[in-house]
Length: 61
Image (cartoon, rainbow, N blue to C red):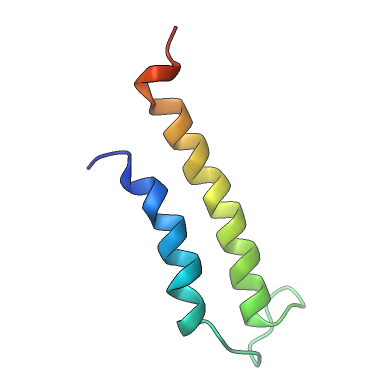
């Protein structure tokens, strides 16, 4: 698996996943589900970008 797919994963999570997560009724941590999903996507995007940065060959000295 190429590490570059981790760049596409957050885009799919936000643009496509919001269509399926557009719900209000299940509250997670006191937030409506859609808001929780967006916060989760932001956190997971940071994790994915950190992994891409770590394994990018151009960042090695």
